[in-house]
Image (cartoon, rainbow, N blue to C red):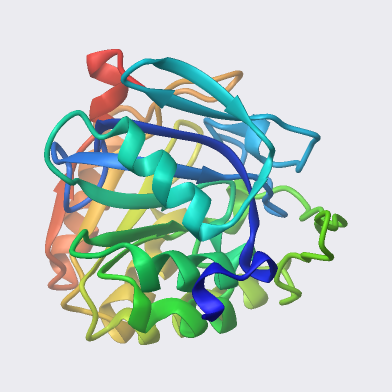
Length: 272
C-alpha cells in the first residue's frame, strides 16, 4: 500500500527513452526518470536546470509526442509514463536528476511496482543515509566520485510538495573531510552491490587532485569498476589533455582498480 501513497510523490522534470551513455551499462536502451532538486553545485553539471524545484510542468517524451503533466507525481503515475515512452519491450529504468536521493520514498515506491524491469540509480554519492534507505530496492548504483575542488557551496533544498512532501534532510558535505567521509560511507555500502563508480576529469586539475578518490575506492570498494569520464566541455570547463588522462588512468591501475575511459556516449551520438 505504501508504494502508491501520495507521500511518496516527487517532482519530475522529464521521462524519456534513450541510450545509457555512461558507466557499466553504456549502450543499453533505458527509460530515464529525471527528478528535480539537487543541493550540490558541480562546476561541470550538464543539467543545472535540475537544481531547483520549480512550478513544472513535467515533460513526458512519449511515442505520440511530448506531453506535459503536473510537476509532482506518485510512483504509480510515473510508471504509467514509463509505459508510454517505451518503444517496444520493457526497458531498464534509470532514476537520475538532480539528485534522486533527495526523494528516497519515491524510489522505494517505484521499486515496489515496476515489475520485472531493472531499476538503476544515478547518484552523486553525497548522502549515505539516503543511499542505505534505498539500496536493497535498486538493481544497480552508478556512483559519482566528486573531487571537492569541483564543488561549489551546497544550496539546501527548501521546498514542499502540494501534500507536504519534503526532500531528504541529510546534511550536505562541504569540506574536503566531509566529502571524503560521505564518499567512503557510500563506497562501503555498494561494496557488495551491483555498482560502478564514475570520476569526471577536467582541464586545470592535476593527477594529485584525484589521488585521494582513487585510494578511497581501492580501500572501500576495490571490486567496483571505475569509469574515468573526460568532461564534456561546458561553460568555462574544458576536457583534460592526454597527459592528465593517462596519469590518472595509470594511478588507478597501480592501485589494482578495474578502470576504463569512457566519455559521455549519448552526447557523441547527439541524443538525449
